[in-house]
Length: 245
Length: 116
Image (tube, one colour):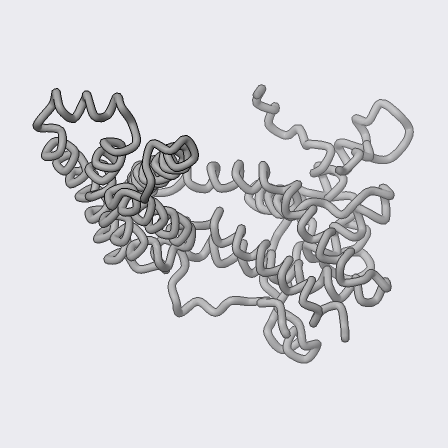
């Protein structure tokens, strides 16, 4: 098997191309396509040269990854330079998109954190004998935390980001109230707090609902936005130099 | 970061002009990976990082030191490989290289940077 057709090379090349797609996202389609094609051509030439020089697939993959990694600061500086020259409207849209992503990701991290906290308190309560069985709200909070974790992981991919944000809205809307309900069984302080504040549950649902609304808004934005616009590359542009199988 | 004076080339840009001129004299033009290999062979260093190489080539093309164009589809298809973006050192690039050689404090040709 030639070096070019090895799995090691293909995995490394895919990783580099994915990174190239990431840092050319939102750029003028012609500039983005030019850089992507040039990197794809470089990867192919690198593999051909490695084959001729007797370099093994593992060493080639390592060399490709190292070249990409060492070039990351230059890639980011180049992106920043290109975007500075871009239309102000495009820059604003990119910033707004990044801000929305940051907010939704923070909501996801909060959900996962709450689920994790309930797991910790639940295990502790079971170990010291505070509870004999798993309370329903605790189970609910853990499941919601898991759903949030899966949605957060799915948000990494641009194609499914909108649907992932929509899925995140469900645990976000419910997990605050569920966590409150779980802590009623697992924490003495929570019992005091819940008894003193009779309005805590509607308040938790209101806050959760507001955060869920942010997720839904982001989801609609990402689902309506074609992936190619985000990637800065029209679907019609042919990609040069995809590593060939 | 201090801005560099107009007309002053970075060591990497000089190295690209020097190695690029050499490859161009033999083959008529050069492409990204071929240049990275030429630089690595010349300096005994690792292959230049993707980002560093293509950012420099892009900047030099915009500055008029290099001219770039995509290779025709036929030769690439015949060779069973993707099209290359071919670069050539322009007259301005040659002049900049000559000026830097003249201004170099040592008798050696061009400052040879250590390329990580």
